[in-house]
Length: 424
Ligand code: ADP
Image 1 (cartoon, protein in one colour):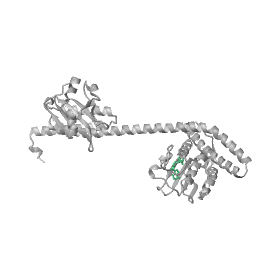
Image 2 (cartoon, rainbow, N blue to C red; image 1 turned 90 degrees about the vertical axis):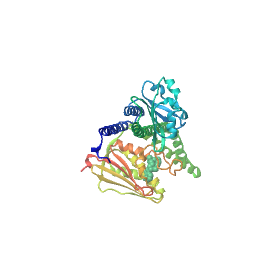
Image 3 (cartoon, rainbow, N blue to C red; image 1 turned 60 degrees about the vertical axis):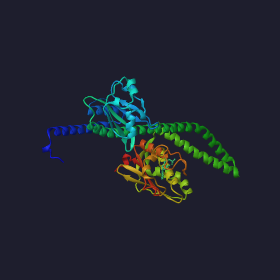
């Protein structure tokens, strides 16, 4: 490294200039990173490019991913709006050469450069004299070209090329980020649309199914009463299936009303013991059918919460049903309660299939199921936990899931705020 005391005043000036340019590049980089909107970002890049090189104008040409064409995406000056979208032939333009040869270029006089795309200048009534262009890359992929034209004083110098190369590298990353954000927004809008379609479908289906299902249930019950032998077996299985369908339809209706916050809450003082016992008994037959060890561990003190009794029981039944469903036959399911400060926690533990860490929150999303919909072995619409969370929300309570991972069982906690008389 040269001793600064030995530098000539010209060399000191050159160094000071370089430091100034680098500082400016840092500021520009910060400005570029502060926007995730493509158009303002392109304006910032071009403004910086003209400023750093003392040029008349700048433009950005991006490669079309589908066709491989190069087209003007942004340009400064009066002709900018006419230039936008114009395709530039890869084999008859300097920008095309920059892409094909994957290197920066300085052209002092474009009229001596056979690859200059003259017809564009003619169409735009613009006079390009000199040009400096650099490729923009993301990793090894070329995404476009950043060009500055017509140096205002003298000719483009190697340091202009250095500044524009640094700028182009940062610009490429910033442009790529805006694409990622846009694609994320599009995907999430698409998902919202799909979820809305599903919700609409469920709303219509549940509404339309209710009346015919009521009739089927009515006749199946009548048939059961008046039949014997094999006909009674048929009637009984018809009645059971119709009951299952009614549970599904009720789930759909509940979800809709809870989400619209239209369902009225009948709040009263409810004992946690009473609530848990009712939910436990509702799921007893199912648990026995799978030979589970199914235990309700009573608490010594009874806790009291302010709740809509039937909705709170429904929320707990959903969790118990899942524990039974997602535990292989002969498993263990334990229902218990704990006091935690001013909350009563109702806990359901199972030693079943468990839940992968990344799904622990998502299982509360509408229609989300851990199993692949095409190969899944368990029935259900994927709305039980959504209903449970909505119910808990309406009680100013919480619900969450924990699991050490697949095959390791799960633990669900429903936390209800305790009623005054239960808090110490
Ligand atoms: P459904 O049970 O109809 O699929 P839910 O909303 O009740 O819908 O549950 C969503 C998903 O959460 C289930 O499909 C399942 O993948 C997972 N899940 C819920 N409870 C458990 C549990 N106790 N053990 C393992 N996975 C569970």
